[in-house]
Amino acid sequence: MAALAAASPGGDECLEEDEDELEPGLDEAEAEPEVGSGAKAAGGPRGAVLTRRGITLRVLLRDGLLEPGRGVLSIYYLGKKFVGDLGSDGTITWQETGQVFNSPSAWATHCKRLVNPAKKSGCGWASVRYKGQKLDQYKAAWLRKHQPNVPPPEESLASEGEEEELPEDEEEEAAREGRVPLPEPAAPKKPEERSKKQQSKSLTEPAGTDPGTAGKRLEVKPRVPVRYCTLGTRDSARNPQTLVEVTSFSAINKFQPFNVAISSNVLLLLDFHSHLTRSEVVGYLGGRWDTNTQLLTVLRAFPCRTRLGDAEAAGAVEEEICQSLFLRGLSLVGWYHSHPFGPALPSLHDIDAQMDYQLKLQGSGNGFQPCLGLICGPFYHGNPGVESKIAPFWVMPPPEQRPNDYGIPMDVEVTYIQDGFLTNDVVQEMTLLVEFYKGAPDLVKFQELWSQDQTYLDKLKGSLASRTPKDQSFTHILEQIFSLLKLSG
Image 1 (cartoon, rainbow, N blue to C red):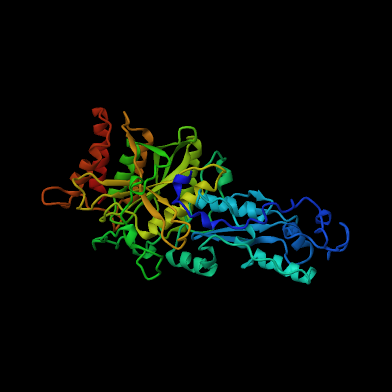
Image 2 (cartoon, helix red, strand yellow):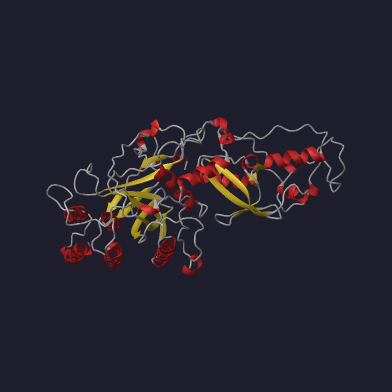
């Protein structure tokens, strides 16, 4: 798992003094006083000297420095925010998954390893904030109140770079960039359990896209990609639509941490979807993750048939896709979107979104599960031929000593599996997509010329050719769909 993140220097270890703190279920009155302190025996008044490790959340709750509540605890790490509930018994419930942790250290270590698997410790009291203030400040306040004659201990050493993370800045940055959290992974849940809608925007509304410009957005202005090494620290003045060249794992002397196999029907459907409109499209990827072989198999594409900004329709489409995943025994394994007239490279916004989605999927369980991003560039004239460039990518967290850098977009090596036939699901989705975009102002006019000697319909057929089953019996089905496209304009 260490291959998932850049190696961090050994000097970033913190003094994990709360690792051995008392379990919340143990009455703090049983804590041993320090030898030679002159304190009263265990069970005496609360002024008895507790070791610093003996001061737990339950002690602070009992003495009124903290109050239980929902969402009062938070962690900010490498640009990510985690929110937890503080129980009256001193336990922490992570809102994302409902997991319960017995100490700040346990929760912080778990969350940080999701973002950076190379992280060895969590620095709990220095990392977890209660209503915006670090917990070690409340511990220090307890010591000043109950042990005024004891010299104040040195503060825990946070990992290098963590002190610079300001939660207010993180929230403002997230709001400014409009990041979109990935919907809950469609693990084997009953469809009715999935009815609760996301409080924020769903994946069906690609972040960074103006909802009011559907049908007007023509991505004709060329965007020149930049190399990752030129980015440096995050800069709010930098255009979030800046494209970034991907990096190979071999270039940084690392192995790809998982293998990927993609069905040709997946590429066929998302390529078809991307060709229909001059606006960006988005969809989900369904498949399976084998922890034994570390193989991610992408078996199905689920196009989102929604217009940007239509939150009500987006929720309904999301619900329908989650039910489809469940009924087919598939898991949510990634997402795709298009850059209609630009290269299939991630933008700065795509990089941040992908990091959020990776965290969302990893947070659904204790084990590692990758989340794959696919970008399709259907009409980019820089492509070598008529075939759309479909680029798989994954984002590696920045080095821990540089937490304010962007994530590193990594090129993912993929094995493509040629399907022997078109499934009814794919044919039905293609038909529904044609119907959905029929008469839309941003619908591609397939009779018009894409190049000097090819129409947009010729371009579409040429791009789908290598992704179409070799069995000629399916040709007439596709021709029927192409005929519908001619009429839809």
